[in-house]
Amino acid sequence: MSNFVVGLTGGIGSGKSAATDCFAAHGIGVVDTDAIAHELTAADGAAMPALRAEFGWEVAAADGALDRSRMRRLAFADPAVRWRLEGILHPMIRELAGERCRQAVSPYVILAVPLLVESGTYRQRCDRVVVVDCPESLQISRVMARNGLGETEVRAILATQASRDQRLAAADDVLANDGDLAALKLQIAGLHQRYLRMTAQKAKAKC
Image (cartoon, rainbow, N blue to C red; front, side, top):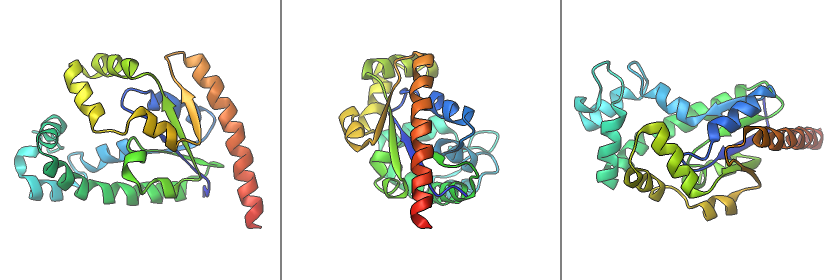
């Protein structure tokens, strides 16, 4: 069981997946709240009955999974819809994430939370917070290329997230990700060694 939790966050398009992949390559367990959200909103996901009851069957796609594009449009159009959606999903995500962190067998565990800074509750669950950082212009171009969204749509998403300055202020460690994978791997190798030392120190303090 991993008792040392490293919260990893970053704005959309910052490269969080590349960073978690690098930690996983070192044998470190990764608990990804985005992946848990997809799991909960799949066709047979645990959240779907509550979502259908709250928003109607029209939020489900033909295969029974959440129609994420439709739900995203509804949530951006009406903040009350977003709050209701989060009221259903977030407690379920937090519970599953906590359970999986406790089950992790690596020396420490990465808890990847896109909205770690915004949520307010995840910070107290983490021994350390690492922020994946890049310029906003790079975030926008990455998301436009990856998701096929227009710049206006991407900026609307960014506006719902913490600012770059807010994330950096909450960081214990920062990973600069300007697209150079080799440089990112080198930074993570260094952090990995630091977290191993911190994990050992925490375990020793408990003895």
